[in-house]
Amino acid sequence: MRTRRLLAAVAAASALLPLLSGCGGTGASGNAGATCPGGRVRFGIEPYEDPAKLKPAYEVLAAALQRKLGCPVELKVVEDYSAEVLAMRNGQLELAQFGPLGYVFASRMADARAVASFADAKGALTTYTGGIWVPAKSPITSVKDLAGKSLALSSPGSTSGDALPRYALKTAGLTESSVRIDYAGGHPEALLALVNGKADAAEINSQQLATAQAAGTFDPSKYRRIWSSEPIPNDPITVHGKLDQRFREAVVKALLELDAADVAKVGAFLDVDPPGPLVAVTTDTYKPLFDLATTLNLTEKDA
View 1 (cartoon, helix red, strand yellow):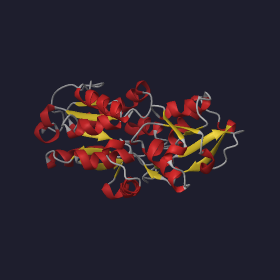
View 2 (cartoon, one colour):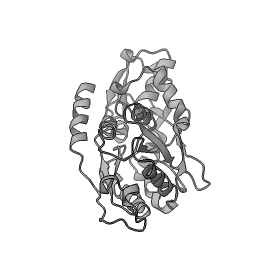
View 3 (cartoon, one colour):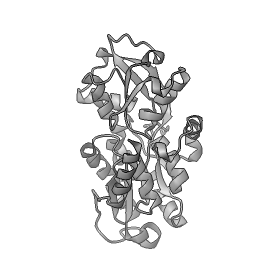
View 4 (cartoon, rainbow, N blue to C red):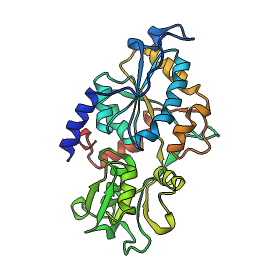
């Protein structure tokens, strides 16, 4: 399965289509050389939610960033984690938002530098948690009870939808072969696999839980959470480390100067309520995820 995903990722990275293109010109900055490498800034995101729902939210953020930088910002929704890492490595993205574990791989393979993430109204970096859920009447009461059962996960390379649930299996003394793991294709799909009776258990992180509850597609009273992860720092927005330093500094400045309203719609998908402006982050912020990758012996082949 993962070989097919990697081939798909290569194809996707070679044929990314912009979903948002800004108008030309250098705008207020008057310094296109510093803030517009190649005359544009390409901003990639992973489809952690339905792309049709993500697009309008990220268009607001991209448009605000475009105004701050004074050059066109093109929003690109890639196919999956692997495709986004590959696109940045191949020079097809200047900026990208990764899931925390995806950032581990992007840091190693594509010199992605974490610079900003999502904060609450008090300016504190927000977090989320991974979870494994079962029907309320299920005889499964712990991770150990998943032996011989089916578990719907999101997609390879996902932090809360893959690595952390697999870590939960490991710490419970289960081998992955003792559980029927099915990659549903995304967080919403994993949740639906549980709701539609296609899996005995499923990963549902706190962000997807909030989104599904708001949409009326998941009633927590009918299900039970048997495991929850430690808090995970929210997704980093990264910049390619090999780009001109003036550009990287300009992007960081622009991102941190965005208003809360500019990022609020994106924050809603990340369970950031109430939202604040973005805050600065570094590689050290995500050290627990680097440690997790080491513990599970994860490499880019697992993305």
